[in-house]
Image (cartoon, rainbow over the protein chains, first blue to last red):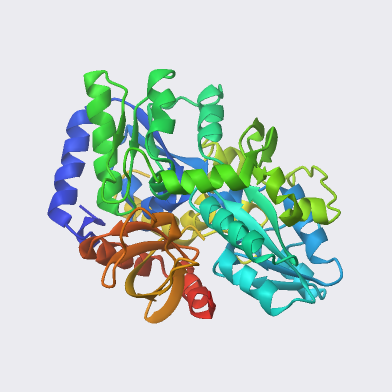
Length: 375
Length: 90
């Protein structure tokens, strides 16, 4: 059994793979892994080649870099290029293309764009540079939103008036619902995101089981975690059950992190709708700053174009993000679109399905084909 | 940004701003532990850190596992560690 030998506990992995084969019993199953971190693990460790022919893992929209639409990148660049602005961003966002280049291109043109590890580092830059307008490009699901919220609370408490946030935080539940409502896909269940669930807990996923009759198992990030979660999904399917279960009990508890949720509720408000790359506008799927924090809202402090920009015609990130096609089925994958010269977001982030497949998955696939395993 | 990196708490440095010094990726940096307010954090504890914030308390075995997984990521992890080293949270 190729690939398994490099796992932490090969014997346990083999046992899970055998059990998955028995449970699936030749039938077809499609499970969506919502989180980009899971996509990375799956391709990094060749997990898809360990599963029986009928058991397919479908990549979902849970990569925050990947789902940011081009228009928001253009808005970020417009803010970054205003006089006096020191624009701060997580590393992943720097190379995401907008309609006329990326933040890295804006930096080359003279904009002061800097990487930061934490929103608290951006706040520190504002304190250290009182003559500059420091803007933080906030992206991410509920994993990073509480960090932005705590930073804003501190900025307000300390009266750091030259600090603001360009808020692009998104929430995980609305896109899951959008995918369940989409006619394109036939899914039998979900691998729930790990780190997001440390914040939101398990309850927000109940509708998946109760209203749509699909099982969901929150999973950790090790290969064994993924295999075990697939096994738990198949156990539910075999029993005709649809429940929300937790494989990642090492980090995730049922009620999540109430303190993080309370701080988010204080600092953010739901946007009526927000555009997602590939999924279009989804209502109540993103966060803006609450009115009490209006002074720290970069969208109110600076003029942003706010123009909707269609994806490049050649780019099929939308279909990849919905799980309709696999990365290698995209027309420009690996030719016009590579990690060095990405056309679409999925090729930028290490958690994007295309970049993960480009860097790791295709090697496993070639190896698997060469030994006669399934493609 | 989505990488959760394990770190071990060295000391609590600023109760007001809820900062602790942690040993993370071979360096000592300040992080915020305020999101774990209901949990008593003590030196020696392991936490999972996202963008300078402790998001979960984990045990040493989980920390070792998480670190092993991160190291297998290669460049993405090295990029994140480079940013951690630049971090100057105070």
